Image 1 (tube, one colour):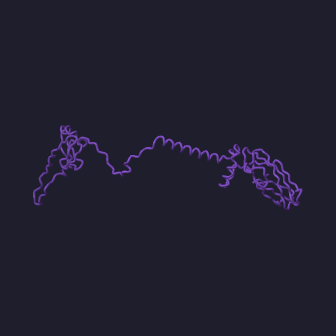
Image 2 (tube, helix red, strand yellow):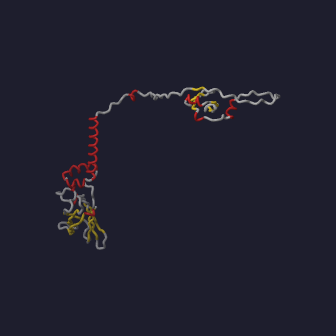
Image 3 (cartoon, helix red, strand yellow):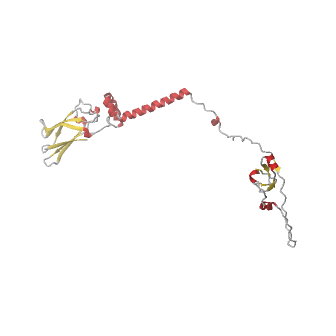
Length: 265
């Protein structure tokens, strides 16, 4: 049988006894490379590779035809016992001392306390956000919070009540007549009612006057603090289905007015 070196392509003759004794591991006689001969066994040598290893001296031009070149006999093979498997040591890294130093783990009790405090803070934050965005219901159930919310909204430029449904505010009663004490003035009496299910802010009220042709001749806007009695807390909002009586006075060119309209804003 023949085998060849994977490094220099040199070929060798080898016997079954030699392969068995070496466990298939051989050393090339040309370059000294150790390799496993079993996967490279052949019954015949490769003539092309043998020719590459043959060195022939050139004859002069006048010489007779060159003699037939005989391929050299394969060199003797060196048999070596199977190589013992060695454990490759793990690589060593040159790390800074600060990374090599062991970091002490936090104590179990302190760690649990920190987690507990963090969870409590998150719950408080979530509860505060929920209460802020649902403060209409909160105020309806706890009216005592209105002064504090009012003070907070003055700083944040917001309103105590978030919900605002102008379509739910109805005129239960209205009456417009000449003012009994002043000329060119009107006395307006209206009753408002919040038909929504929740408390909502008092609206602004606009009174519009029209002549016989339906043309608007005058209007006046009233803010809640202008049309509400001093005994009513504006910040408390309109309680559902609780009538609110409003008295308005309008002075000016009102003689030509024959109709009126109320608009909430």
